[in-house]
Length: 253
Image 1 (tube, helix red, strand yellow):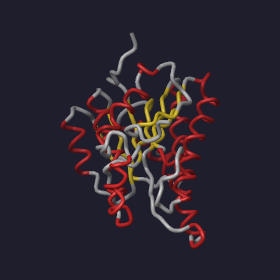
Image 2 (image 1 turned 90 degrees about the vertical axis):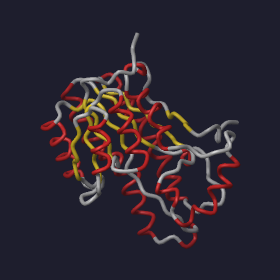
Image 3 (image 1 turned 45 degrees about the vertical axis):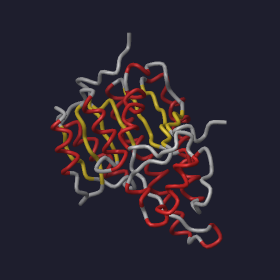
C-alpha cells in the first residue's frame, strides 16, 4: 500500500526560511526527505537549517528570488549538485499587503502578482524541467482559501486574485504533465499564525477571523505539514490537479 515515507527523496521548498514554508520543510524532513531551502538572498535560514538537520535531513540553503528564472534554475542545479535528483517541491514563497482597489497603485498590484503568481509559475517551470529529466515528481503550490472566497474586511483584490491564479495554474500544469510522471496540486490554508498574518493591518482582524472559523481558532503553521506530505507522497499517487483546502471548515457550505 502506498505510504507517506519520503526517504531517499530530495525536496525544494521555496519560502522555506519561515512561516508555512518552514513548517512544511520540517514535516518533509520528518518523513525522510533531504531538503533544499530556497529563500531570498540575505534571508536568515539558520533556524530552518538547524531544525532540518536535527530531524535527520541533509539540508542546504539555495538563495534565489522567485521573480528570477535564472536564479531559480541555479537553485535547482545547486539542489541536485548537493543533495541529488529533485523529485519533490513545495512553492510557498509569497507576500501579502492591503489597499482599497480604487486607490491601489499599479506597482503594488504588479509586485504581488510577480511574486505570488508569476513566481509560482517560474518555480514550477524550473522544478519540472529537473523532474522531467528524472522521470518523476510531485509539486505542491501553496495557494490560499482567499483564492476560493473573498476575505471580508480585507482590501486585497490583488492577493485574492493572484491566489486564484495559483490554484488554476496548478490544475493546468497537472493536466500538461499528468502523462509525464509529474503530479501537481495546490494546498490552500485558511487563516494561519504566520508572520504575514501578524502584519499591522491584520492584527485587529485575527480574533474576528478565528471566531468566524468553524473550529473557532486559526491554524498553526505546523498543521499544513501533514497535508503537504500527503500530496507529495505515494499515498497520493493517484491525486493530481486538486486544491486541498486546509481551513478549519471556513469555506464549507
